[in-house]
Length: 250
Ligand code: NDP
Ligand code: 8X3
Image 1 (tube, rainbow, N blue to C red):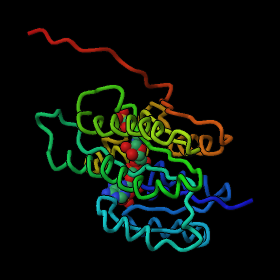
Image 2 (cartoon, rainbow, N blue to C red; image 1 turned 30 degrees about the vertical axis):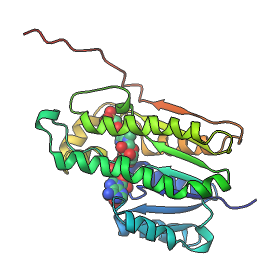
Image 3 (tube, rainbow, N blue to C red; image 1 turned 60 degrees about the vertical axis):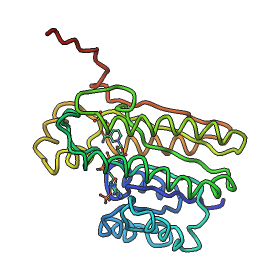
Image 4 (tube, helix red, strand yellow; image 1 turned 45 degrees about the vertical axis):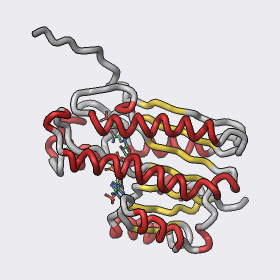
């Protein structure tokens, strides 16, 4: 059987790191990207350079992204699956109190970098009848206080995914949006600027989604027979559900 290759962005932590483990354990080669080179190196040390190619760069830097692609070792150049996972939320303030720089950073990573890498890889994904899995979020479907631009970026990811699917009609390329709810990773630590207490408090007693749960979901989608496409999948912990609208009486 030919060894397949996945490019997994945001591989230094959370969903991305767990997905690297799952795909390597299934015999795939993985291109693992993220900014923290030390964490990527640990993946290489654990699995070997023939299985994991680590490439450390800031995904907002288009020149660095293109250079990373151009520098792929020959064994990793045939990419069968792109997992657009790198992303972040910054801040929980209402829009009127939010930091514009944080809004722009979320758009740069969650939207601009995602479409840039997708555009770069589309020709070979079409050639190989490959697949794209975009990590969106329930925040793209359900508004919540303080979700403002983060939810907006994920609504983009969800809809871009479905538009990609339409454009790729007939190519054999599979495209999926995964929309997870509350999952315990470094997500809230990042969102709160490093407040471990706030992160622990959010997840306490909730039995949230784990990174492994999402890695298993990505693996399930990727390992389905090639005539099946999961368009979108929303995943929540049992402890989370949608709540109603709000009314202000002045
Ligand atoms: P983590 O914070 O644990 O992981 C985020 C990953 O994104 C890290 O590997 C980080 O790498 C990478 N990343 C962030 N900014 C950049 C950048 N500028 N350049 C390169 N890589 C970057 O969070 P999760 O695993 O939870 O998040 C993964 C995805 O899942 C995100 O898109 C997130 O929005 C989404 N999501 C998360 C949910 C949750 O509740 N946890 C629920 C729904 C969706 P590094 O810092 O090393 O660069
Ligand atoms: C992360 C899920 O609900 O914290 O995308 O926005 S949520």
